View 1: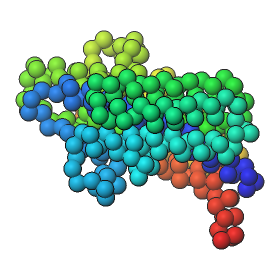
View 2: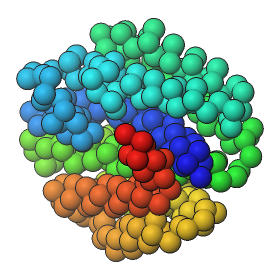
View 3: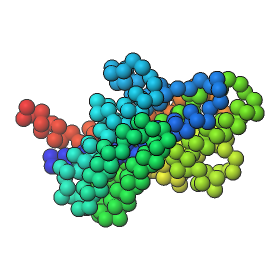
View 4: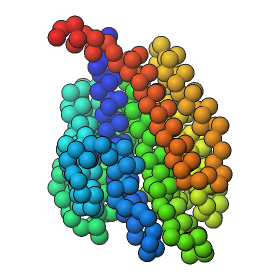
Length: 320
């Protein structure tokens, strides 16, 4: 049981770290596009990205300036930041190396290739905004190849359920953070030009999550903030929405033994999401809603850790 507990936790975190790397790339690209679309006088800066990512306290330990180059370096290359893209991929690589025997043989090669790619290309992404999108999109594409390999080459057993749990908890959390970028934008005027800017900002959010075409297909050809928020939080079919991720989490839990506590946490998150009225929210209220979703997702993680990952931690405590 101790061995199963260690395998489950390592693969759960492998999946979370890979998802975090991809979504940090998406978050940086979304913020870059937001800044390009803003009119003169709009209130928004790179420091917002650090706050949205939940890394402002850690960042302030090492940096006083909040300029683009420093923040982008912190989010991509700075290994003092455990959520940096390079750090996340390194952690995923280490977790994969430890339990290679339960994973498809090619997985190690693909994660190692991703690690080498980001180490080689990331400095240019920090220094050159024009190349940043292409390089970070490379991270996203390589990560998609890893997900496809796992889905198509691994038995969908209990081990795989922990991989899916890690992926969907992290994905839902990062979707809320990408949506939250726009809640921090303050425009100098409320006129037709401002309305056009807001539409472009939400269009950029959809594209950052590869959701633009599906939004147009299932919601509207017109991009309105409340509709985008409702789609990205509550649509049941698109795989990056919070609703869909919670569905996946419940499905995974149902396949595990002794799932009751974690399932209660998942259903609390579900009920709160369903009760949210998302039409014409103020930016401040939207931010509070998104914070609450993040708290609920952390509650699911805590329940999982207590139920499934505690065995080898308890064993380590007894031996120390």
